[in-house]
Amino acid sequence: MEGFIDNVDNLVDASNKGHCIIETLKRRNLLEEGIQRGSNLVKMHDIIRDLAQYIASSSCNEGPKYLVKACVGLNEPPPEGTWREFETISLMMNDITEFPDKPECPNLISLILTRNCRIIAVPHGFFELMSALQVLDLSYTSITSLSVSPSSLLNLRALILTACRRLTEVPFLGQLKKLQFLDIKSSGI
Image (cartoon, rainbow, N blue to C red; front, side, top):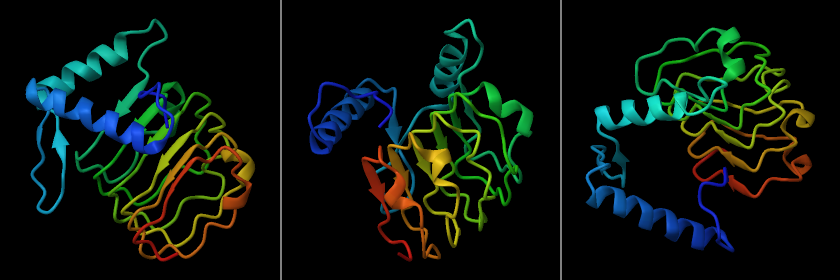
């Protein structure tokens, strides 16, 4: 949904092309098998990941575009003032419980919060200043509802709520005119 895989006509073709890319990276030892039972996961070697983040962050004159703090034991998100400069924020697999009320993120395209199991709510105004947001991943969190202003998610193309077992409603869903991908499998909906 972020446009990394182009020249495809549908999600099946995009998925197949993505799997081919992953297999190529595994053969070249840039990715390795993940270590979670029962899952088809891959991961980057720590050194490769650090190099990729460095290159991605310093490849433009405007400063870093990616904030990746995955699986580092965060109990709270980075300070609200630091969010502004990023296009992608990944805080997956941490212990975050709360988020700032209204972080200013005019350039944010992807927000990945998956596997922060202690998240039970997202503040109502949280997405208001994220007008460019296209991909939102809240999978494997404990949210019970996602009641936000739909006008703040007008550019959302992918909403991933996999295994949000306590989630019972997403009232604004019908107003997301650009939404192309919705995953609510194993949720409470």
